[in-house]
Structure formats: structure tokens, C-alpha cells
Length: 465
Image (cartoon, rainbow, N blue to C red; front, side):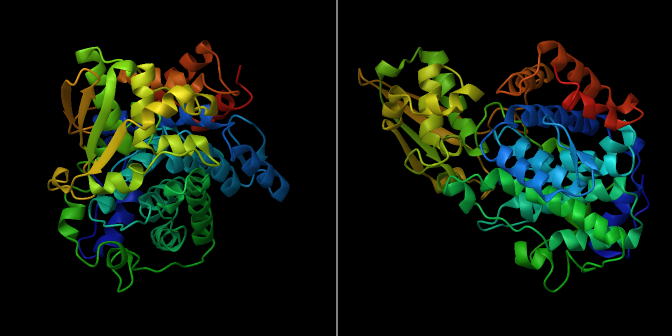
């Protein structure tokens, strides 16, 4: 167990934890979750490599030039580490199948590419060190997220940043003062809002990349002596003043720090859409299985969700300039798609599937209602969905899904996680073969035996079949 200074405040205790925690300090179940995240998000990178905006971002990065420090995954070639992390993280978020946790924090899509870029910067690190860096970064971000109130700010940029800085700072072996400055510098960087989602923009995926880019540069600047605010969490204008109205419990945030890890709060999505749509997709698929529903036999679908989910996903479905983003974040589309096709797969969010007149007509039968009663004690974090389907015969059927599939309390099996990885890795113009997918699965689940995590890079670039 790492030695945490009792008199160091939250900032100092987190610095000690991130720097001094060992692989052996991290429980096996937390390491297993870290591996699941790595596998899931590598699949997301392959599947999202050719998604809208990612190629443009890659062209910009190549045009910017600079030192060849870290690899652009899937596409190949090396660019400055912060720019490699920018592109790789944008690809990881593009299909919205990366890891997630309420109230909308995406950590691994930035932390995994950031850690890989950091590993290349230092000439490699062991699989154990790579996994430990991710585990401590995740745990820090989750603990802070638990005490946060975002009010429309995107948790990924506000809080998820700490995970990426922690992972890169540990791999680059920052000393305590440098690590503290890196966190402070990261705290001063990307602040994003959910308006990017509501307006259906590619800024969602690019924003995920900006987190990684900022994390690498914060760590590099801190390493060279640039200082950040020391009291980035508890200062008069620190994190908890801005994102918790000054109402937080330091003892609760650090309870069990270094002994128990909170990675069990990480969700891996069962479907390729926003976390707020998963329980409703579960509900309609469950009703199809239970009652044999068909599109022609459904007259109306009423779905009640929390006000938070409604604001994010309950708007009238329209296809704008970014059809995939529009569909990913629409309850109407996700429910209509699952009713029509009996599943929710990556290809169902391609533009030709989205514009299918039959699914467009079905979206008009879906009515979304905000219901504050569904919040319970988890205001802003509950993803419960209550659905009533009225058939053309006048009958009704009901299903309530309190916890979406893939989320804590309703997790996916390891076999399902692997199948979801295989679907992502086999999707799009940069898809890989089944044999190559199996090789990647074996590599990730054996990471603790890997001497150099950078051996993964060829599997994700020139080693592609």
C-alpha cells in the first residue's frame, strides 16, 4: 500500500497515490476491469479510424509536422506525442462505444491513448506499469467525479483529464512537485460542454482528443519546470469550488485510497450509442423478446427517463450534418432502430441505415417524457428508463430498466466484451481479420506478462492484416 501523507491535503494525497502505488497494490478485479477497458477502447479505435473528422484531424496533424515521437494507431506513422494522442483519442470516441460512467464521463478513450503515447516517449514500459498507471488514473478521476456537479459541463474534459495526466505523469516518472504541477496545468486546460452533443457535432470526438493532447503537454511542461496551481482541488478557485459549489467531503473522497479501487463504477456499453439510450434500448429489445412485438404491430411507444437524460437524448430526432452523432444521442432513433432490426449494432448507425424511411417513420411513434421521479437519490446520474408500448390492437406492455446493460450492477460478461470488441475491430474500412482480433485479445489479457507495452503498437499499425 502506498504511503499517503495525512497532512498533505487532497492534492498531495493523490500525488502520493499516483506515484507510489504498485501493481501488487491494485486488486485483481480492478486490473481485470482495466484490461477490459483497454481491449474495448482499442476496438473502438480500429472501428472509428475512418469516421468523419478523424481523417481531417490526421491530415492536420501530419501537416503540422514535428518530432516523430509516438504512433498514430491504425493509420501508421509517427508525430509529436501530444498530436498522436489527439488523433488516437478522437478515433476512440468516434463511435461512442468507449467506456463511460454517469453523468457522462469518458475516461479510457483519452487515458489509454495518452498512456500509450507516454510509453513511446520514454522508450517503453512494462505491461504491469501500463496497467497500474491506468488503474490509479481511473481511480483518482472516479473519486473526484463522485463528488462533482457539472451543470452542463462535460465531465470528460473537466474531471476525466485527471486520469490521463496521472497515467502519463506516472509513466514519465514525474517527481512529486512535477506531478502536482502537471495536475494543476491539466486542470487549467480543456473545459467542454454537452452543447457539442446537443448540437450533433464532431466536436464530441475531437474534444476527447483535446483532453489527451492537453494531458501530454501538461506532463511535458511540468517535467521541464513549468508550474501549475498547487491547490487545484481545494483552492479558493480550485476544482471543488467550481464543480461542487464547495460542498465536498475530503474523507469520503479518499476513503480507502490505495487499498480499495472504484473501477467497478466503469461501464462498457452494450450498444453503440450514448449511455442515456442504453436502458431504453434494453427495454424495447426485452419487450420484443417477451411479447413478440413487430414494427407493424406497434402503435405508440412512451418512454419515461430522468430530466438529465431527456435534456441529452430526448429531443425530436432530426438528421443534420452529422447523422451518426444525431442517431447516437437520440432516444427516438435508438428505440426505433432496435424495434425495426431487433438489435443495435455499429452498422445501424451508418447514414444509409439512419435515413431508411421505415426507421424514420418509426421514430415518430416514440414519445419521450422527462420524469423527475426516476431520479431517486442519484440526481443527474440515474439512467433508469420506464417504457410502455401500445399495440395496434390496443393492448399495452410495460418494462422498467433501472440499470442499463453493461453498467455497474448489470455488467456484461467477459465473452460479451470480447464479442463487442470483435464487432468494433471488424467494422469500417480499417477492419482487421478475425485472427488478428484473437491475437489482440490474447495480448491485452496477458498484459501483466508483457515486458514492453509498445509491442502493442505493431498490432495496431503495420501489423494489421
